[in-house]
Length: 89
Image (cartoon, rainbow, N blue to C red):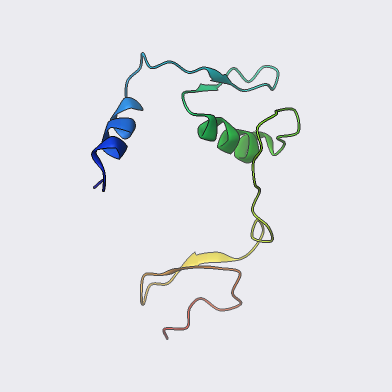
């Protein structure tokens, strides 16, 4: 469910195969392009692990990249960087 009609409209646009994709990955032989600048930035970080070749300013997560992650079966909450799963138990 979307809180705003605009968000639904934007999401539905992602399913349009003819939508313009002006944001092109600068890495050689990649060939990926994106309709949103944000999606290109996420691609650069998650796939190439290097956004230094691009002029887009992207904030990388600090201290959670290699942290333990999980989902508590008891309460349903996610956790990051804890030595144990959850405090609900």
